[in-house]
Every structure is written in structure tokens, then in C-alpha cells.
Length: 211
Image (tube, rainbow, N blue to C red; front, side, top):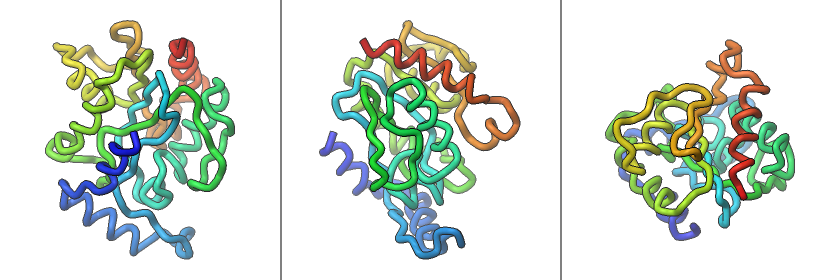
């Protein structure tokens, strides 16, 4: 895992994404003006001996691109880690920085794209460039995989060779271990499309597969 993370951090395959992440690290949001942004691709985070995998879309420009840790420092992460703590997969509900003491148990978090994309929309080529990192993770036999959103769902099934791709929906299940869940983005949580109860239900299903 350390070797894979080092490879991810050093990646420069997507010039558009590297330029965007670097620009955001210099421009900064006013609330974080005194902070030093990470500004590099975001490595996987969690238990290196995990039997459960969570796959997101991509880092946020002023979230993980700032803190250097998956889902840390933005509202999507607030929802995710609060849910992970509720189902016993995290030691605390808050995630603000790499020094906040957060630890995950039995679960690893990754993404389909490891750099923050403009408008949270990576291109197909950028997803393809990051695909080998997800393929390496999926070469392991996971007891449970939670896909946050349709792109993560499609990429997991693509890399596992499951065709045709099953339709994505919240709560969808493939092979008894791949679970679909709406992404805890503000677009979903602010509109009520995804509630805390809905998220925790799918996280609880994932936790039950740990063995």
C-alpha cells in the first residue's frame, strides 16, 4: 500500500488536473488563506489490512486537495466519516486534517480519480489514466465494496470484468458484496436525495461484510 500511495502521489499523467490542483493550492479559499495546501494527487486512506473498500469520485479542490487526505476538510467528508463512526468503522466522527487523530478500522478509502477536477467532473481520459491504481486495489479479494456514485459503480464493475454493467441505484447490489450508494456530495445532501439514515444504512451493510 505504501508503494502504491507513493506512485499515486508522484503521478503527473493528467496535465489539466495537475494545473488545476496547483492553481487552487496557490489561490486558496479565504477561510484557508493561512494554510499550506497539499496540492498533489491524494493517496488511499485507511486500514492497510482492510477487507472493505469505499470508492469515491475525486478529491475536492479545497477539501482533500488542501488537507492531503481522502474526504477530509469538506462537507462530503463530514457526512462520510460521521457515518463510518456511527457503524463502528472509524474511531471518531470528525475529519479536519491529517493530524486530527482519525483512524479507520477494516476499511480503506480510494477514488476513481486522485486529483481534484474542475467542477468535480473528470474527463473519460483522466478516469482512464487513474484506472491502473484502482485495478491494483481490486486485484485483492475484498469482502465488501461500497461505490459512492455512478462513476465509481461503473469503474468498479469495469475493472472486475463484470459486463454488462448493472444499472446504478442507491442500495443496488452485485455479487453480494458490491453496494451502490449516492455520493454524499452537497448536491445530494442539500436536496435531501441522500439523508444520513440512507447513508448509514449502506455503510452498515458494508460493515456487516467485514467478517
